[in-house]
Image (cartoon, rainbow, N blue to C red):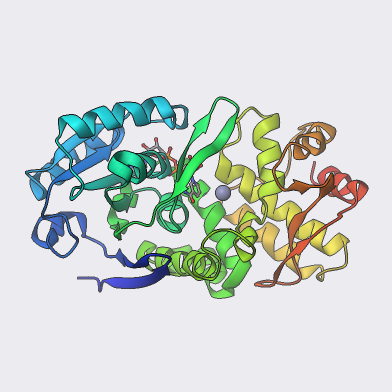
Length: 351
Ligand SMILES: NC(=O)c1ccc[n+]([C@@H]2O[C@H](COP(=O)([O-])OP(=O)(O)OC[C@H]3O[C@@H](n4cnc5c(N)ncnc54)[C@H](O)[C@@H]3O)[C@@H](O)[C@H]2O)c1
Ligand SMILES: [Zn+2]
């Protein structure tokens, strides 16, 4: 039996725990009280996860109402939130009730936003099921939805009461989603934890629970230092200026994590070009991204179009391009005024 790993997060308005434990889902019923799930609960999930884990969930929490939202980023909308409110009313969820978000980042962000706003806020338990949602979106208190005009344009800060992670559910995660989660996990290693990078390289020696715990710790450290994104939390955007531009240019043909993988390679090259770090850094980044099955080359995408797409990224301030770059592994820094020709040269070197 694997040992439970607990990570405490100090957040504005109280602290909460992230519990990482293989087999946790099977024990949810017995532990319901420990996790504040012994009162009225509405479980929000999607049809994919319902098919896989619906029975386990209803066995564990027989009195809970199960609410299903559609699967897919295109449903991370105010329309879905409105439907969730109606389901919450029907389930008679009151101010003492709890929303349990069981799913990837889409379920977590959407159900989390509904929980933050329904009756001005009810309790929220996050049970992330994708690698990305375990190491990234379920931690830090950001919840929200997309608008037709752009992603994540509406949202709130809503700290969960507890985050429950059962790494065993990763067995059913599609390979592409696993790789996408690795993109953010590599990012966390590059920001703050070289040992995490070694764990990813030696993946056959590493348990998913250990990988998740170390990657979660990086995000926890960042969001505890800067809960409302006034400064250091920007470091989490490493690789993301490139990634968002590629998502735009490919009209989301590249998944976010794939674009992040490439973005990390590009950010490391740019860091070296600007003299911030030595050549071993881009070499190491490229190797681990490639090993993880994520793209390291653009494969013919239009570099000029990518550069133009960076102009609409919210990280462009006062008309100048601002990047999170690396002065070394685990030494991120915010660099303003990066010259356009350096960025374009990096993109062209990665065709
Ligand atoms: N709130 C934040 O701070 C934050 C941070 C990063 C990303 N996000 C958001 O997270 C979302 C992306 O999250 P995601 O990558 O988890 O995508 P997702 O929620 O769409 O999940 C990816 C796919 O995997 C499936 N899935 C999830 N867990 C599974 C499992 N255990 N077994 C089988 N299938 C499973 C889902 O049903 C879905 O089809 C985006 O909307 C992004 O904006 C939010
Ligand atoms: Zn990301």
